[in-house]
Image (cartoon, rainbow, N blue to C red; front, side, top):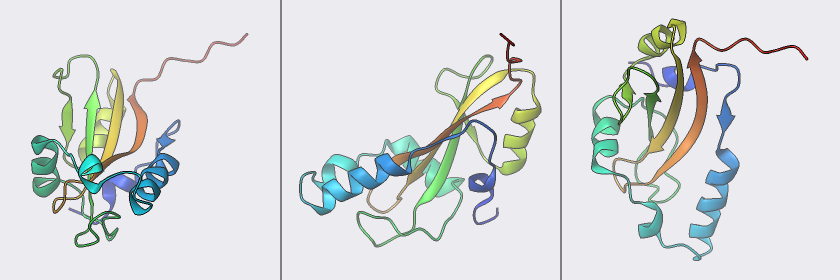
Length: 133
């Protein structure tokens, strides 16, 4: 797997959550939030990060001991209620060509301390045509 392949997939209409991330990290650095309050990743997310998460060179902003990994999940019709773990850019591109309109979320997670934060959300798959008024 590439170093940042899923991260480079930039569909139209994506929402970037960097400002919210920066706010949370700043609150931890100022002592207003404890690291334990933000290092609470679900065990399944950490397992996905270790197993199929996309590697990065971004150092964890909380523990500063490891690099974060990116995990993408897709939700929508005909997918499991808990979402589909997207394991590669190729799989994400296949979902984007599909007939179903899906919502995808990329989460950064630190396998060392459990830090996790929604990095971005975006639509994949068939998009409804915009109506002209």
